[in-house]
Image 1 (spheres, rainbow, N blue to C red):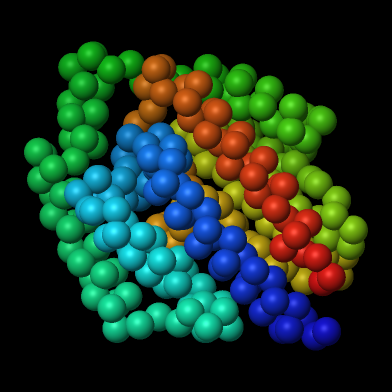
Image 2 (cartoon, helix red, strand yellow):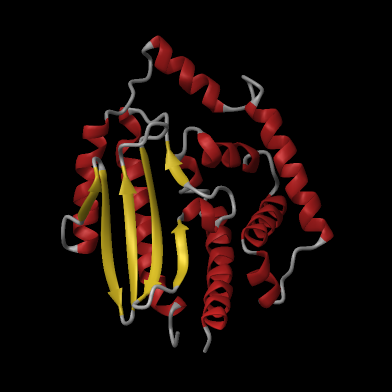
Length: 239
């Protein structure tokens, strides 16, 4: 199998898994998207709350297809004219809500920070439970690749799954991602994460977190990482 064929098989599997994961996210009441007070995740949640269940499924399917259109075609589920309309409506509604102080909780959250009604979560208070969760998942403390940023590795045959967590960003309080590469440097996942798999944003990050958000966000992050680590062997099977 050539490198291009390996990527195509993997990306098709990843597309199918991502599509199922997004439907599960909807069915379970958005346990991931509800952890984002602001940013791409929070804005997508604000739109989803205004849609019917059928509209949510349609938007989820279109978003995932937009993220990996070639994989969608390989899976016989290509982008359609309806998908493009759904995505256009999503972007329009998202922009309107983001500009409306009454339309998105992001405005009220930032007002609460300014007034002192909401206390911003300190990085050290967030780092401790995140490091504990990752130590539990990976069995070690990872490799510190920068101040406040660590890399963890899982060996999967000839493949290595690296997970990165960063708590020192200038514009966010927490972000994470996965890479999967083989022994010869073939990369099939680069900066993969929940919002990327959902087709919402290239990066999954949390900002505007308060003290009361800590345990829910850390629990969500651990769940997301464990689920991807668990499915990775199936995605790589035979490759």
